Image (cartoon, rainbow, N blue to C red; front, side, top):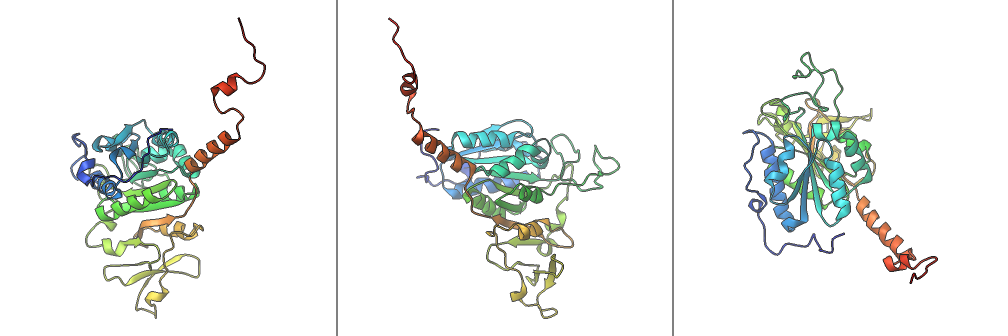
Length: 346
């Protein structure tokens, strides 16, 4: 482990511009990745750590060009292996603030095994999962999150596969932190990235992202100005789950154990009847229900959906090393070499 003490408050106040590299941005005009990049740079500036405290690690895909555009330490790795390399970087230097960037294909297809085990181990890093429901870099094949029936270059008659729901996959792997945002909301994405960084353990931030070339409008029902207010539920811990253009819709628990959308003021429903969001409960049942909601039957849950205190893998690892060292009979190499039967050769 490096002797340098990192994660110390930065003396110089940084701005989002300080985190922008001098590399030419190669993303398509209008790509949702631009908004996510701006959000992350803004979040980093507001977290007030030094630039050398950060390591941005990516796999392969459009999203994985991210490290090139960041003026921080970075590593553009190989397809599906970003979680493994990010895990190694964090364990080698637990003081680093590690941010892994992956697309839905990179993280959930070839990298699916690394993804679930990074979550299960609870390594203290943030995984930004860009979900545009398509393979963009390789020109439009269906991905693990593409909807059934979607016509692509590799499913010309419509995909027959059941798609992954990233939140369900993360919760099934015992995730302690899951948040969701959308590329069109710089403010919300900045807020959830900061919350993810503050959480000790693996933080999953799924960002619904638009690919203007191969899957344009995939999330249009929650981004269109005319409909977004009725289909976005921004969850805030301790606050009632109210949404809608007139802020008069909410969620209650139905008798069948399913969430029900209600209108405040109708059928005797009041604001007091609306469920209050509890991001900190260890029971993942409500978090599962919230993260599984889909439009148009339900609004799409955004914000920090789950945030449960836990001890991270790297914290346990560091403590275990200290415990073993304290109990070891060998304190240095000389102790080892002088142990057992020894002799002097003249």
